[in-house]
Image (cartoon, rainbow, N blue to C red; front, side, top):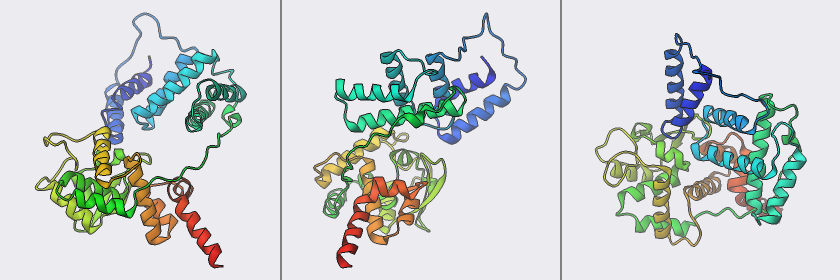
Length: 331
């Protein structure tokens, strides 16, 4: 095992416990500590056969970890690829795009998987083979031969103004839930960004929230409404540092699941008839901001998107289409 492989293995094991900054710091510390150390194998070096599926999957996991992919995302990549190799008996080096498409078609016909999950399989497998080509593990980029699966455009589920008002009134006495509600409506953060939000990231004087982008690995500044400011100040109380949201017993921060469970309580208070997640509130935030400003670029930046295409397609397509229809009717 080389020093680089050792470092990457350690980083992978610690992914679920450290922030992206912590991962970078860990890699730096281990690298420095190993400078004057020579690694030798006890007997023989581990196999590094170029065309071995297990070996290539390990390499892929290490690279996903290194670029900051969440542990749950990595596990989904691993599950999809392992199932593909196991069921087809194919080798990654000689596999073709047509064989991947045949496999997806088989899963749709035999396993009755939804078009949505089929699209997920296609997306993840294209990403894997695209990575393998860029890293020169395969001779051809077969990801270009894996056709994108079309799926019906779903109505973007978001909360209505009436549901929001109902939740706000119902939760006025619950400081923690009310703070979460107002934060999601004011800044539209991802669930991981809520978990990682620190009191030190809040500037009540300027009404600003500094959010570390879960996917972009960059800071962005969001603005807090007066309602959000008051709700957060009441919930935080005399605390001056640490996670904004903590357990009911006041010990430590919270995980993604805990935040999602709180969101379900908010949805129940709002009387929602559909499944509500933090992402539902993110879409709600996007829709409200677009209706308020009619500025797609502004909304995109507030969401932390690298492209307005993502904002339109997945967050505000219904609002944009409605504007176009009204404009055509008025013409």
